[in-house]
Amino acid sequence: MPFNRRRMLHGLGGLAVLTAVPACAFGGSEPEAPVGPTGDASPENPFGVDAAAALEVVIFKGGLGDAYATEVHEPMYAQKFPGAKIEHVATQQIAQTLQPRFAGGDVPDVIANSGTDLMDNATLVDAGQILELTALFDAPSIEDPAVKVRDALAPGTVESGLVNGKPYVLNYVYTAYGLWYDAKLFAANGWEPAKTWADFDALCAKIKAKGMDPFAYPGKNAAYYQYWQILVSAAKIGGNKVLVDIDNLVDGVWVSDPVKQSANAWAEIGAKYLTKSYEGLTHTEVQTSQNQGRIGFFPCGSWLENEQKEQTPDGFEYALTPLPSVTANDALPFEAIRAAAGEGYIVPSKGKNTAGGQEYLRIMLSKAGARGFTEKTGNITVVKGAADGLPLSPGNKSVAAAQTAAGDNLVTYNSFEGWYKELETELRTKTNALMFGRITGDQFCEQMQAKADSVKADSSIPKQQRNG
Image (tube, rainbow, N blue to C red):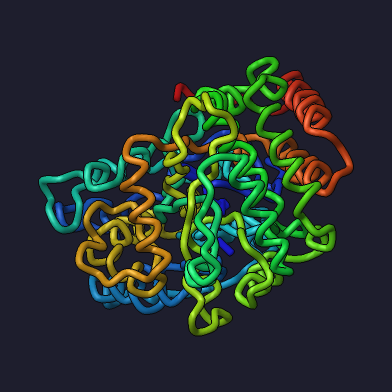
């Protein structure tokens, strides 16, 4: 399971589940100068990497696996610096694995900071533990030194990794979010994904009549899969400013009409079609249940197909549909989807080889590195044109079609997930309470507004700001 999880996204996303790491665990809060170049800088080696310096890479081994690192990016680095020893660490417990090392001053050089147990990037930045990546994005791209790395990336990539207005996170995977279903199952039953909320309700009733659960999400460890849907629906109703205002802790945004309408619409779906047992199930359990023909719609990002490839039976065909329009006057059309850069990679500022860490990311952002990633994971990166000509899976074909249909109608990412851990944790809790019938839509909004107000009033929490 990748997310940030996914700051888009999350932005496009996405989208993120965070483990708070106290700044005091890392020592002082003043950023320290990065470890300087130890080799000769040149257009081919812009960071001055010492060709013999060791490099340690820590990868979150979730839905993307880690073969893209061991079989693509690390060999590319080794080919360029054959004298460098590369240490590879794969884990699903990023914070648990690395927090003691940060506290002890023994950090790796590159981290894929993702998964349920990811570290809080804003806290790390505040503690001076992450290297700012402006130099990376301004460096020459590997294929064409006349083109800066930033100019080879999809729009919004650099912006999605900003903290305090500066880029600290490389969000690498271009992810689309929505409702996933089995296209062959739907075709066999004559079902078409709904474009309006009334039609969505009617379709869920038909699916339920077949003895299936029309909709499900994993309440135990991935309630954010569902709160993304609530936020996206709110943005489709009221426009992307709703999500920007949520990030900026604008007074009253959680109790505004778009958020209330979205929360109440989803609460109705939960009351009518969501089996309560899903609150106690993990993402893998719910996803496998869908593969077994028990679930109609599953809310997720486009890593889903690759994550489930070992459990997906023959004849199951993943497809993505945008969220149905809640009202007849939504600001964004049905075709609008959230699609953005997710899966964050960071370079610790106190690593032994920060130059090598930056060069490793530059290799990832080459067309060859990005193309190899897509071949290994089935996921498209933020590098423009890197996947051109590659055969795409049914799910990725569906994503491509959805992105084409959406055009410029894209739902923005949210940054509060990485900025305000307490707010994100509260949102997961309240999402389960809403969807499993313990609170109403209006109560959900009031309680989230109260938490946002509390965060805003807490002077000990550093505040962030985004413009759009």
